[in-house]
Length: 282
Image 1 (tube, rainbow, N blue to C red):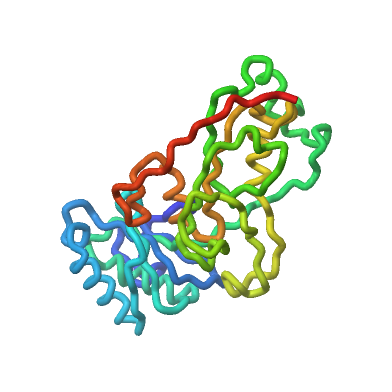
Image 2 (cartoon, rainbow, N blue to C red):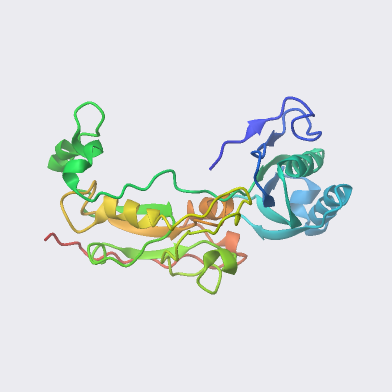
């Protein structure tokens, strides 16, 4: 999750009060989702009508309409504008929102991309496991523990079907609420299958080029718990939480999968309990 910065002058955030935590939009992007957190005890935090009134007031200043999309598990809310904003417009909108002293912070609900995707599966080429100076000395750790009985939450693009991981996978969850971004025909559900994070040129944001799917979640899950002895914790169970292509708010929701699903708008619902199967070695 991108770090928030503290606004020290009104010019950078379009009039934000000093001390408000905001995220400054990067140049060249387009944004229509934001995360806002109201202070405990404020009218906006306690009343939906007050919150909507604040959103309407800030949006009207810029000729926009803003709507409440969903609450988040930790008390913040995701909001959406009726059109995409460039970096300068997003800064102005954040500034208008943060004028209200009830606002604790505002940030962009930005879409994240994997930083890198290694494509060589040979252990001898994966120096980061064993290299004396730059590696993590994993072979020595495997002599002490192989991760048996440990459940590791992988918050990433999801997971693709692969025979080396089926024995160790436990039920996961898809935290992407937008059906279009989820690419599986619905919003949040109990299917963490990676549908691909490919994009066409100028898709999201408009300055980006075309890209193939990274399958990054499968790579990470395989690193954690593929059915082999050449991975970092080969007897651990990965619980796949899918959040790619949706933005920070989906990944934030995935960080607390055992909490009530308040972020889905269903406070009474909890994630299904996982029943791991004892893994086997080849």
